[in-house]
Amino acid sequence: MVNSRVETTAVAVTGGSGGAVRSCAGCGGGISDRFLLFSMDRYWHTRCLKCSCCQAQLGEIGSTCFSKGGMILCRNDYIRLFGHSGACNACGQSIPASEMVMRAQGNVYHLKCFTCATCRNRLVPGDRFHYVNGTIFCEHDRPGGALLSSHLTPLQSNTLLPDQKV
Image: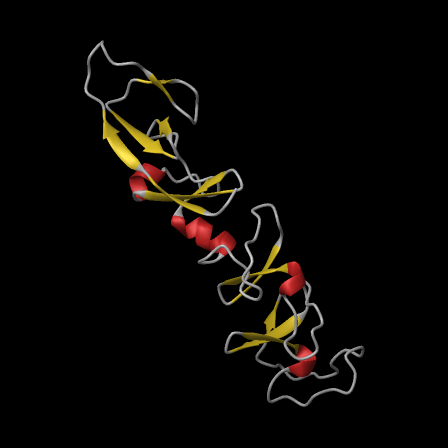
């Protein structure tokens, strides 16, 4: 499924026996409530249209929800999971909902794209890195630091450096 921003419309249902009872896309039950939501071409009880992550009732927190990989998400969880665009900050390609990602300073990266700008070594969870002006550097290639002659030997320093840990 492609990244999609979906407008959620609240629909007031006027009582009357002539109208067809709509089925809720969330629970499958009939909707006899006075208000219902219409989103992603389906009808929902207001209590059933929820964020897949935080379970917030989406009709109560705004008129927009996001859909990706079969998940329905509030704006905050969509940005937390997929960044502002749903694309990798390094290559610009879309990140599938099922794919593991790396994050730095609010940006999201494919695992294969989370690499040092200088040596191109891939950084993995637990590696220390530096994020300078939107660019990722491994600990060995950090700007302003003494470059080590080999990327194979660990940094042998007891001083604390202003860095981040994946």
